[in-house]
Structure formats: C-alpha cells, structure tokens
Image (cartoon, rainbow, N blue to C red; front, side, top):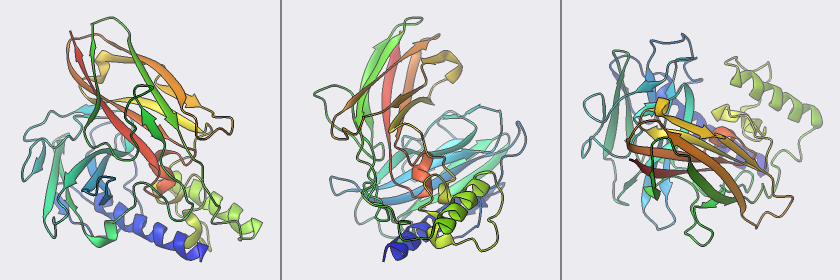
Length: 335
C-alpha cells in the first residue's frame, strides 16, 4: 500500500513537469502533455525562461488555486521582465501576481492564482518573452495536475508553518497574496523576521524496501538532479521517496527548516539580503516556532515584492513531490 501511494504521487509529478519541459519558441503546451525530463540548463545567457505549472488544488478556505513557478535555463543570466506584453497572463490580466524577476534555475511555486471552484475546463495562459523568445504555459484545473498543497500522502509530510509577527496570522503552502507590507529607507537595513515551525514526515514509504533498493533510488535521484538518466533497473514508483530527488530534482536541506529570501518583483541588483538564507533547527520541538532573522538593504527607491521561501528537509520543490514547502510574499515600499 505504501508503494502504491508513492507511485501515484510520482506519476502525478511526472505529468506536471511535461507542461514546461518541451515548450519552445512561440509554442504553447497544454496540461496533459508529458515529457521525461526538464530542458537542461545550457548557455550562460541568451536562453528562454519557461513558465511552469506546479499543479492545482484546494486552499484551506475551500477555494481552488493554481500554483505556478518558472525555470530560467540560463546558467548566469538574471532576467527582469515588467508586467505587460512580454510578461502577461490572460484572460483577465496581464497582472495576476507573477514575478518580474527571474533568477537562473528552477523556482517552485513562486505564486498562486485563485480560481473559482467551478473553473471547469477554462484556462489561463502565461506568456513570457525573454531574450527574444516566446514561451507560454496553459494554467488549468485538469485532473492529472491535482495536488494536495498541505500534505504529501506518500510520507505524511506537511509544509512549514510561518508567521511574520509572534501573534500574527499563520501561513503555509502557496502564496495567495501579500502576507506582509513594510516600509524601508534607501541605504538602511530593513529587518526581515519571521517565525517558522515544521512537523517532519510521519512515516517512511521506503521503510519496507531492501537497503540496496533504497541506495539505488538515492543514486538515481542524484543522477536525475545532474541531468542524467536513471541507472539500469530504475524503479520510478520508488523515486519520490528518495529524500532529495524525485521529479523535482530538489536536494534535501540539512536544517530542519531553511528560510531563503528572494526578489519577486523589482531590480535585484538594488537589494542585498544579509543573510539570504537562514537555517533553523528545532531540536525535536516541532510544535514550537523558531525565529529567523535577516535584513534587506535597498540601494534605490521604489516598490518591491520579496519572497520568503521556506523549505523543510525535503528541499526545493518538496523533493519533487509538489509538497511540502511554503512561499510568502512581502511588499516593501522604499523611500
């Protein structure tokens, strides 16, 4: 039974990755298309940024949301695309909370779009034009993309819970709006403080597997993360239990919780985080919030949106299982 649950979670993730894996210049790929691997990062610059649908599911208030990320194929090129013809979501946009700042690599669940429960077979399209190349992704609520934002059925894992004030509201899972609004002054360090806690996996789906099978799964996950195919006799049904690999190619974090600050909107060259990443260890006290302190210093006035990415030990993208991590957006007005 455990292996069956893992297989379902893995195959759902494999379907999801197909949305962005093969979208090329001027092409649109709809949910339901499949691909075996993401396009490899290639040149230092000059390549596209691919929008990526992570999946959709119910929020805690009962509304549905489509969770979206991106993949910047350039190894070194950071790209900024303002909201408008080259960065638009339609119909109803062009602005639906998407980022305007794109760092190299794969970035999971950076924003979410709330949709009605009766959204049906409608779809939204996110179009990005980067380095003169157009990529698009269809955002829809089709069954193969359904995910549980708040619990990984294969492991019993849940996303970290965070808050921006000791007695403030709690957040977990996809970002569904601005969680905190701050004001800063050019050149002055702005405190960025949040509190986080996380309940670890409640069970291990590979506990009944032989030791050599678990080792082989971990090795195959590492090969996938390096853009290589699996070794012979790779068992896809067990991959999602490998701890740091699986579909999302995420590497498991060493800390119980890792808080990482990123720029969602605004010129990142104007923002310095110190530190950009804060590891937290709860010493086994999983129900107690741990404080994560950082600062952001801005070199230019303007409106910025920062993103707090909070991972548990499953790492980026939840180890590829589309659960469990938390993203939250913070708006900063700099004067």
